[in-house]
Length: 442
Ligand code: S3P
Image (tube, protein in one colour):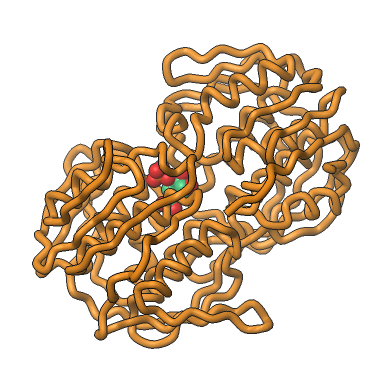
């Protein structure tokens, strides 16, 4: 998918200013296409993230029979297969860099009696799929893969079985894969989640007409059940701006004194808002205006002012609500005063890259004092930005790339990244948006 690597250099820039709407939420965009693609009728989607990851989902649903178009106003129309059902894709489904596409769609195929082959780029082909293969096998799917990685072939079951499955990993993707497989089951499929993760699948499937119930177990775990064979009906969806993408201009504004940036329409689902909670505890000046609900999700406009930040101790329970934000939070901690301890980051090792290792390596190269202790990252901030002046390996990881470009807006010496091409997976137009705010990224 990607041609030549795209080196980028970010140099110190001073105060940032502007009024922007970050791109649409990636998780909600994937699910809009998937659920629209299997519902009856035509779902409209406004504000879809047109990043490469979501486009991989679009291509896959088209390959399985959905009709998906967009008009000149960037409204997407997804005509689902409904009762006709999905059909087997003629060729391998290319998931690119997108773990969400791969895991959720493998779940979807499980509830359909056909075979599909999934592949992806070098980053995705290193990521563990055993976490979905295990429960989906219990439901009756059969898999061919080498070592539980992509490329893999999944054959769905004509009579998928209802299971009750307690998640052994804290993962919204695994939960969602099982719920999607459960759509094809005669009966009720149950997922038990000890630690809450993003709930977009549950909320949106309900919106499309599925019966999803959530109750509490005595120990506080969530018991999430879906009744199979629902009649899903097309919806009109407005996708809020992605808090995980807003995080980059947000932290850039906080780090650069004198900055004043407005971020519009940012999704604030409590299961996604851990970064904002953490930054506020660190002393960030963030005002929330126009709090409202859009498409069932809480959103607000954020007014962000350059702030002096202090390192804090971030508890492990908060990790799922900000799992994609640790790279940029580590950047914020590197410019803060005092020690920042981020606990319980084991899942970062199996993201688009080993984010724990890459952040530790890159920040050390920039002159930051830090340690990794088990699954914790500890950063010793001095209150002055680190030296910078490093060449950073991003390992096909969009969030590593954007994080170091943000750090470069503040360091004494510019920061160079080896490849910015993967930023297009989640945040097309990132460099232009940042430069319009006053960043110097070339
Ligand atoms: C996602 C879930 C998270 C997150 C990913 C998107 C989703 O992954 O890192 O970017 O849309 O369900 P895990 O479920 O593996 O934690």
